Length: 208
Image (cartoon, rainbow, N blue to C red; front, top):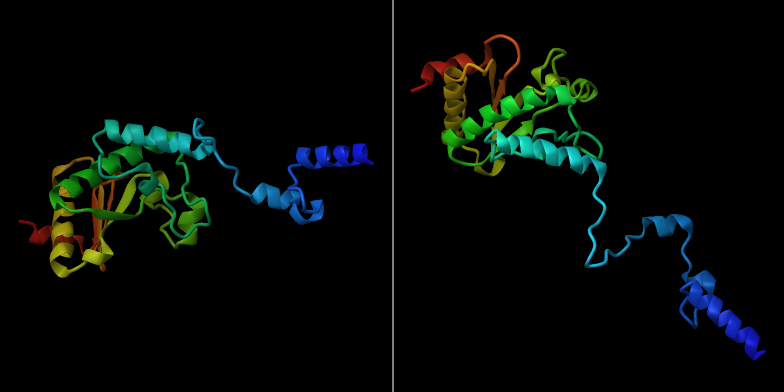
């Protein structure tokens, strides 16, 4: 009997079942086990998702281009999509994203306060889902919509952001499209010909 009990105890320890509990009380199903986080030993690094690789690479290229206030995470964020909400633009479009991020950085420098990128790169399916124009510069990773932070929004800051965008659009030949919308939002892009819409002409006329 003692030998049988010792053998049973050894099997329970091998299964990591606490003594005093039946296996049915403590053992997890395959689904439960998969959903349970595993502790990471202090001397090891967790395995990063594959998407982190391209985000890190794109961030390095943005930093090398002098973009210090905007990240790849911001510029590729799809707020109305299901998780994961970051989508990698095709690599051939990265130069567009970096070019428009440089415009955004110039605006940020002139504005002198944090600003919010409400949308940058949009894949075709997402652009269609949010009602974007079929030829939107966003689907070529060449556009950003810049906004005053909601918590800081007021007429003074709205005008300040509009004027900063107008100055960059006027002075930088890489800037092509500028659209000014209600709600302290300005679109800038680097795709196609020089053009304006919305309230842009009013803003340009007010530019000091």
